Amino acid sequence: MPKVRVDQDVRIVNLPQSMVVPLLSEDGRENFFLDIHSGRLRLTKVTYQTRGKQVVVLVRLDVDGPPHRNPDGEEHPCPHLHLFREGFGDKWAIPVPQDKFTNLESHWQTLQDFMDYCSIVEPPVFERGMFA
Image (cartoon, rainbow, N blue to C red; front, side):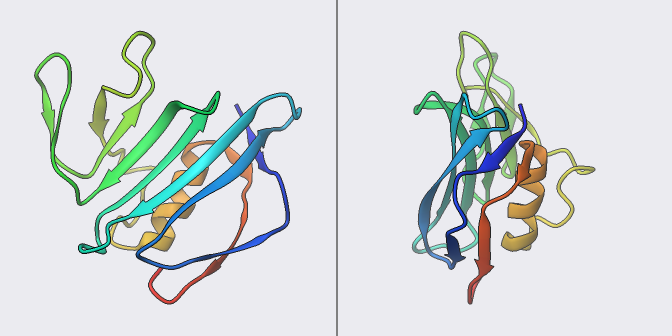
């Protein structure tokens, strides 16, 4: 579902940092959130996720974290992408689609790619911070 920003607030992206950014469906009927979280000790560890219904993780991208084991026992190293699956929530991960994420070394580019992947058609206003 296409998502748009809620406000014109400028948010500065610095690492380490955690932030929650509100989003809306284009028709204004559904609320979503974009979460950004980075490690405090290991700045290369970053998680980007979108949530609906306050707590339902729809998509989560984990970069430079531990591997993930799916319910069927299949393991995926980091980076990996979690996609909501009915009955399992965000318990399933897949390899990161290389055609959708162009440079996982760049936190800034990865944020842009993640927003595109999640259909954030009118993204929040971000200012690139010192480490982003």
